[in-house]
Image 1 (cartoon, rainbow, N blue to C red):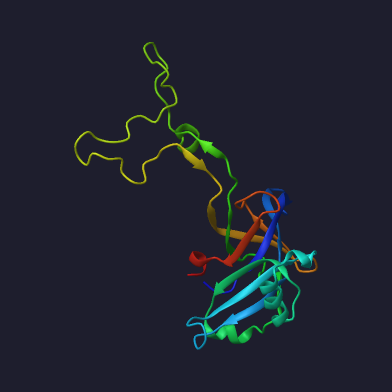
Image 2 (tube, rainbow, N blue to C red):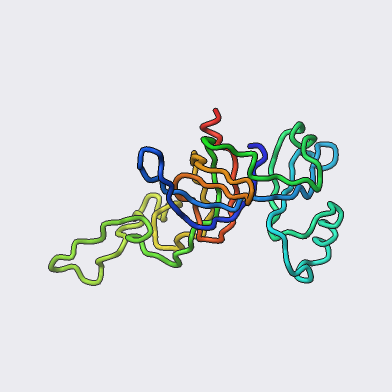
Amino acid sequence: MGLGILGKKLGMTQIFREDGSIVPATVIQAGPCYVVQKKTNEKEGYTAIQLGFEEVKKVNRINKPLVGHFKKANIPPTRILKEFRVGPEEVDANEVGSQISVERFEIGDYVDITGTSKGKGFAGVMKRYGFGGSPASHGTHEYFRHGGSIGQNMTPGRTLKGKKMPGHMGNSRVTVQNLKVVEVRSDNNILLVEGAIPGPNNGYVIINKAVKKNK
């Protein structure tokens, strides 16, 4: 996948193009991220880079093993740690303690952004999956928003896995692909992408170069 960057969703805004059209854009605090650890084939059996994002103000809230982990890399403790699988060349190119900034992206690049979607709590099938519900005509009794039949009598005689039923809605890992970078502000590590990304404001996200567009 390659080395990405960690960030925080700040909110949405809009950008006016030269022709007067409006582009809805999401503002992301992208980095700076510290290179906390490098993993190699010789030691761990695979190659990866561990990044840290957002310094922790109250260090006494970090447990001692993590404090030692950051001290070994000679960087301040961070709130978020994330590992990126990369090739050996990229492992060699990034030294422990160095910073990864938003400058690795340019205007016009396409990115894939992963975050945790907003939790909606327990929801029925009409809200969760857009079911139409039962006809609200004469004779329908307390069955207006139900999901209908969920199984069979004899074969296979059970409810199949993956059946659309009521349950916990949202609060899951979501990736939105092929979002276009419309602005990069390297002075304060701000990245603006066209469209919406998963999660609430101040939610943490992972930004990677788009897999499908690059192919």
